[in-house]
Length: 253
Image (tube, rainbow, N blue to C red; front, side, top):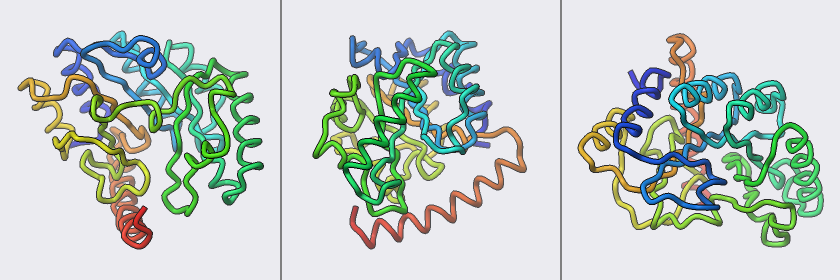
């Protein structure tokens, strides 16, 4: 059964056994390794699930990057501090144009306020856009008028990574080949490899057919060992994928 904490652990162990270096996004920007995994986590919901991910990584001596939204379903201050204290990177998962209906001035003020609040809990030097697939506003457009480096931010993945060099793989849609149902979590790349399940990825790692540099994006709320919660998430995500696919076809975004 896929998308459980057990299969997540198996994935990490396979990567460790294959001699990958693990870097946070901040570390990669500062000094990129040659054979590297960046473990990115978008904490959209259920921050307790992200804490479990952080604990698993810590047990294996690994570090990841965790992006928190400034909404109650993500922003859990004790959990943010616990994840930071385990040695992981904390970042801001901004969605300011969505929450302010495209208003640039209110959006950048919201960004500044939320960034300051997050920095009161942990160091923050990178950010990452939250896709908000049901909104017509793309929060990355905030940087058409402003510059995130003016706020002490060194990098944003969608602007500062070369995805022809780094293979990008995300569990968006609760599958690893969900690009057909992703509205904004998409990148321009020359990579053609695709994987459907976590088992497929593990097989490729064992067979030495997995790319040399990889950014994983996990949404930990999708991963659960509780079968009741696991099944509920499966049904919900399948319904959401139908809506997102309709939105993508309609808007062409």
